[in-house]
Length: 72
Image (tube, rainbow, N blue to C red; front, side):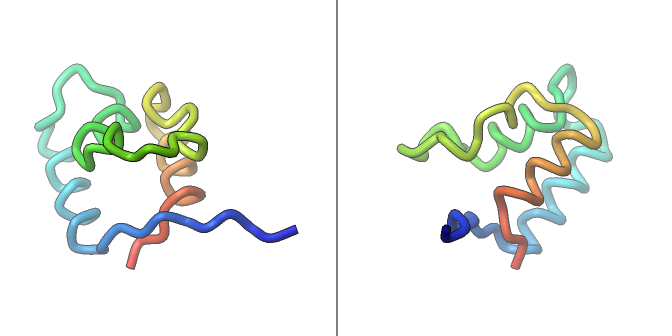
């Protein structure tokens, strides 16, 4: 069985997001929620692989991000 294709995000964009996260720019948002909103993932028509990301926080969110996205 083929592995599902992973979505790609540029490493610079991901680094910028993490920098903003560490600066507290996403007050009152979970890490997964902030990532989802920052990269406007609601615009993707296929949300299958994003299940649970919006609700995830901390280490769980980072694991989901790395399993769904390829940082290039």
